[in-house]
Image 1 (spheres, one colour):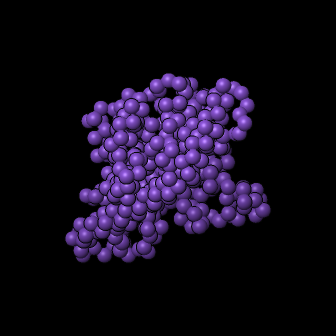
Image 2 (cartoon, helix red, strand yellow):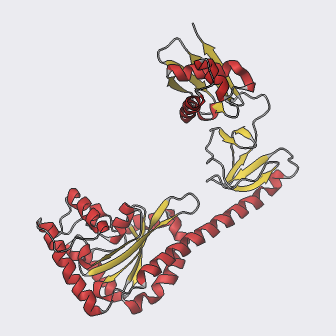
Image 3 (cartoon, helix red, strand yellow):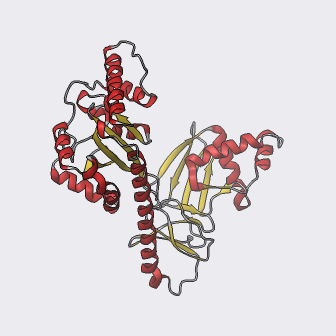
Length: 390
């Protein structure tokens, strides 16, 4: 879009902005993403004419956040792609963490000075709550890329700017790491900027994935001496549950995230108690005959009470009459277990209620987890259950 057209569009947006904020009907409705954001920030009490939250974090706090952020692994790649043209194109490259705190900022000197006046500096929090509608904060709220031009910003002080921002996620676990943003004077907006931001996010996420693969390979090499001569089935996984090495079990990409003293169920291995390694975890089946969970189902209470003692801290759960009855039936059935048809007959006298039986078991597993096994339904391996009736 030519500069003349950008200027005309900016004037139109100012009229829409002023009409909406004054309570009158605008000649044109704001874009949906802008309308949603304005509604949110009006509800937060952000002042469009004021200087809202701008106080930056101390330098030491910013440095600490940088060190803790996985984005520090890829900041050079982001800058290499985006910042190369920043001086010539008069824009800023800004990278924030998941809280909207600006961790890194680079670009043309003149634009950096303008951003300093605005308070758009390293350590500043650039969320909707802090500074109203802006691409960074709105991208965090919408969980999607956002481009804003001129008076689509809520604060009048930001009207002379454009910004294009996109969330960046950790490919290892999908968690939000932060936002990559390009900002500059509104009339210098170039149509390629949105594509550049998207490309930088894809590059960064790809590089993070390569870092992850390199970490798994390093973990695999480090455990080789430990596994020499071991013939039993096992997995070695990283702190996110990704498999670095395997032996005697079908390869899986990932298992449940291990935690200290917490039993997990692993297909092909059954119930396992993860053992901490440097940089990861060793996962192997429990010792044959070992009782991992000693549980007592007390039917004398109302509701029935299940008390569980195991590798985790002891815990209790209140069970509905139906769940208590199901658990009692599974305990009585022993290791052979019961099918949905079996349970339907025992509970209802016929095999016509299998769907409701499966639904009840599914609800029970949300509470009891590894205490229950399926195909057929039974108590999990290593679970010893005592039922107290009177």
